Image 1 (cartoon, rainbow, N blue to C red):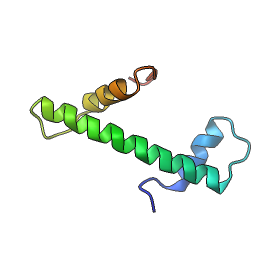
Image 2: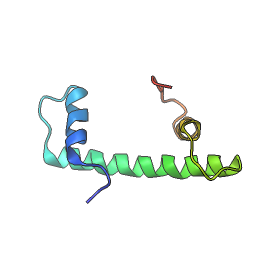
Image 3: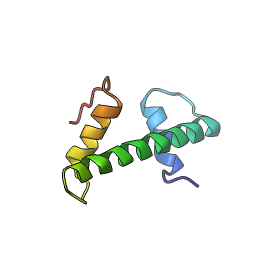
Amino acid sequence: MGELSMAPVHRMLKRAGALRVSEEAAEELRSILEIIGMKISERAIEVAMSAGRRTVRREDVVEAVRVLFPDLRLSKV
């Protein structure tokens, strides 16, 4: 069992425009999102620790995403 539940993954695919979503497609996206989330988390921890903090802050996560995905446009940031 993954960290993310399936219902939000199904909703994400539907919100992106899918008319129907197979269970296998949702499971694969969940798996990929969990891998990406772990990479972002690891990098955010490195950013926080390099700043001399043990607490990971929002800006650490944003910086991690910017480093790992430089072409990604973050609309909420």
